[in-house]
Length: 323
Length: 297
Image 1 (cartoon, rainbow over the protein chains, first blue to last red):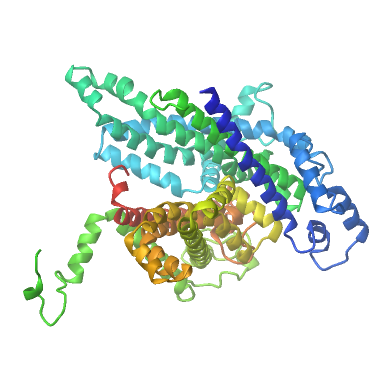
Image 2 (spheres, chains in turn brown, orange; image 1 turned 90 degrees about the vertical axis):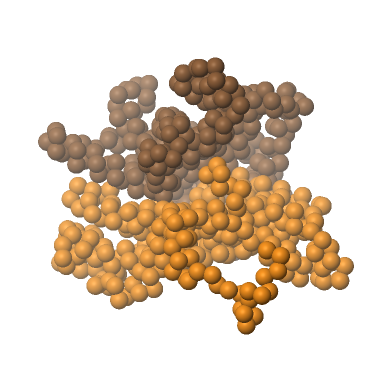
């Protein structure tokens, strides 16, 4: 098991390294360089001083191998340079917003589990009945509804509902307060984006739960359990569900990896200063140091989440043995 | 089933049932897929004949009619610039379909060539290509698209590039696994022994035999591309004003939620129905082309 873990960790590194190279190359593929692009792109007056300053900040005057060395060293020492927009250190900017995004991501994952598991199980147990069709319809629509539109609809719904029943419209607060300082305030703000993102992610998980349950319910040991007269609830919960969990965990884990992408739009709708919003802003403002750092962060989260899923597989399924 | 010759007259293979009956059968066998195909056809129709369906110019703003509610004059109301939302939704289908089809077709075609090539040459080339694909796949779709936009800038053409590139490795990966089996087929050996060029073998002998996974990926990409374009445009990093695009139209949605909820409703509904239709259509294509998946879908 340990040797498998270590081998698996070593397999992560080339992917991360390759992704870092890709980002490095991508930013240097630009005709001219990123500084020309940022300050001279519009064809108006170009301030040579500004371009020179920008080049120095990014170390673009150095030879390529020095640049690459500095770049890689930055990742290893978590010194990712300063933002080209705010001139504050990138790590500081990211750290300030990390909490918000992580909180939404976790809440969204919880939401999606709470939607997906019951719906998936009911759908499998009542296969080919109206309940099943309705649930499948919900899950197909969950994939089709863009989470940002769902977010807008939630806000709209809240407005109309509160207007009608409380007399005045209510919107989730905009200023952020930490969960530990003011839990009620924080949750009243964070629940909605979590719902919008979570619903979308529950769609795939519901389908997965359903098909995994269907497969397990056909197994011999389920028939045995029925034959010895266990009640259906026990069969479903104890015998079937436990064994259907594996693919479901995979999907939920992989979705956690994709959440960062989902947050990009949701945070925009709910106007939350998380990492997703930071990424969008950095792209808008041509803040390349920031974009580069956030893209690498997303890749790292993705790769690590996949790794965790793999390891969970090995831990949870004793049939899978790794050398 | 031994010999069908006496039944064939005038060298024509009998058609069996008339077209309408076969169409009816298809609808019954794949009711959801038929519904999806209907939505897709409706969208194509709207996109082609947008000029004839819409009552107003989608880019024509008028300050007299800002944020007017739905009425007989403006079916879906007007937006903050006094533009007719119905006209913009219909023309938006054109933008969405254009981006969807271009990205899906180019992305999966390049993926097809890379995937088949990688499987065909095998060995070290395959190994290296697959490692590069691993790296590309480590970027979530929208993150990769944003990274590309940060370099090339925004606008419809840039968005197409940004969406197409992340599709390539995803298609290549799937096509490769099918092509690995096809590579071992005797007819590929035969083609090689006649001395056909690599390109000819790849394009004429292997590629046509991995059409099933290729088409499955292509149809799956259609909905995904439309959704991604809408997300990017919503963020202000995709299609730019005044071009009618559904995601872009939703930008003002939260701002005017109280006074003009229709601004936020119709374009979102259009995205949802379009993606829904393309997904159903794609699922049906997958069911037909890959019967193995049918059981557990």
